[in-house]
Structures are given as C-alpha cells and as structure tokens.
Image (cartoon, rainbow, N blue to C red; front, side, top):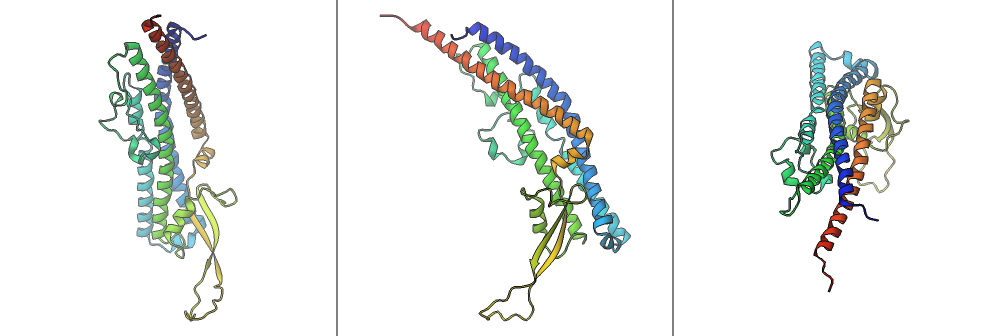
Length: 306
C-alpha cells in the first residue's frame, strides 16, 4: 500500500538532517585530506628525482655543473610546490556546495567537463540548476534544493578524483620534461614516448620495478642501417637495440601505499563518500514515492464520479 504523504515527508526530513550532517563531515575531512595528498605528491616527486639523479643516472648528474644542478633542483621544487597548491583548488567549491541553501550548477553532460570545471564561477548557483514551478509548495522546493545539493556533492567528489588523477599525470610529465632537457633521461627516445609510457593504463607490476614512482621499462628500438640502398627490393631487418626507459610515474595507489597517514585519511574519505552515495539513492527513492503520492492525491482531489 502506498505510503502517506505525511509519513514520506517525515522520512525525507530525517534524511535531510543526515545529509546536512554528512555535508559537515565532508567539509571537515576533505581539507586536511587534500592538504596531505598535496604534501605527499611534493615529497614523492622530489624523492623520485633524487633517485634518478643519484641511483639511476649518477654519471650524468655528476657531469652537470653546480649551476646546472641548482637550476634542475629549483625547477623540480617549483613544479612540486605548484602541484601541491593545485590539490587544494576543489575546496572552494566544496565550501560553496555545503553552504546552506547553496549548491553549484550541475552541467547536463558531466562526462564532457573540462579539467577547470571545479573553478569558482558566478554562474555556479543552485538557482540556475533547479527550476521552480509556480505551483510548487515550500516543502517541494526544499526537497528539490536538497536533491540538488546531493547531486552537486556526488558530482564534486567524482570530479575531484578525476582532477587529482590529472594532477598526478601532469606532475609526472612536467618533471620528465625537465629531466629530459637536463640529459638525465635517455636521449635516444623522444620525450613523447616517455610520456606515453608513463600514461599507459596497461602497465602491470612487472613493468614497474625499483623505487616508488619511477617507471623502468626495457624497449627494443630498430637501428637505422647506414649505407642502405633505398631502391633495394629486399629490406634487411634492422638490428634492434635494447634501450632502458626511465621516467617519473606517479600513481595514486602507490602514493597511499608508501604513506600510511594518507592511506588512513583516504579510507575515511571513501567511507564518507560511500555514505553519501547511499543517501543519494535512498533520498531519490523516497522523492519518487513522494511525487507518486502527491499525484495520487491530486487525482483524487479533482476526480468527480459521473
């Protein structure tokens, strides 16, 4: 039997209180989590470069002048500090979402969002998201606002994870460029190949060996044969030269593995986010029932037997 409108509204009100509490929890745990994440990225980037300079390619590093070494270290520190600051960027939008009666606008196609989608914008207001029909009751408008807040939080969390992954990729690429320019990465392979290897999703544990956040691969590259006749009908197989590929490769799971403090904070965040998703499903389920009950009541109120 359908639930009464009054009972559904009581259950929705309880969920709204739980959601408000969850908003407060997210506001509390996410700033230190992202701060710790940024610090971990900075430390791991610097440590990975240290290992490449002192363990992987010590001869090349020793051939650099004091000025060149200092310049390299300055660039690496600048990149690491910049990435660390960027990990805090989503917090501004979290504060906006969790402010009472406020929520950023959700795009119609979240999968097509640019990486800067979490940046602050004057158009990111709940009023642009929710269409208020003139006949809506105050309770219905409250339910709509709460539904919009949940959607905004779910979207924010997913987009934040996406942007963190992009930051890890960006940090790896920028550091590899500096190392390549300094002659500390192989000069026989183009930089684009190094970047492509660092972004390979199919890399497994056997491909990543050695120190944390450092990618080591052995590749075979065909050597060009000198004096080869371009017009010859038969092409001889060019000899393949094994080349070791080393690059910085930051991975989320590896960062957590080597930082117990970050791992603990991440578990707390995931637990809270999981509760958010559960509340999202339950709230929208009750909202649907509430709308059905209202429609049934509206039908009965206007129906006249012949």
